[in-house]
Length: 140
Image (cartoon, rainbow, N blue to C red; front, side, top):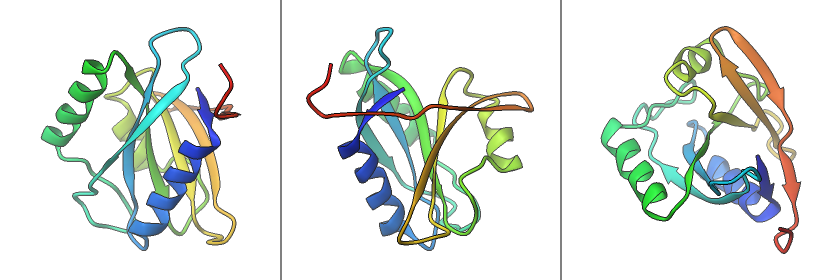
């Protein structure tokens, strides 16, 4: 997934605002081979927990409909880890089973002043880190 620094900063801001609880949201991408991120959609963490996130099913449907109505597609789901490294937990891996092909962006806030962002493809128990390619806002 190609993503601009502005969208990455927006995800980090969301994570900081929702701390100490995990934040969560969705990344919309272009429907072409570039998979360039176009927008993020913040979601409410229904679990209101620093250890896990949960998005209400109706909210997920509303967000996905909005993305598809805009001619885009779901490219990723993001959330924060407020106390641990940005690596998928077993809970994240279990949740990812319902979302094949979707990237999982995790914002690590363990070092509050130096957040870390990492992206993964999760297929069953297989977790593969993939590049989170940052592009300039004016790049194609």
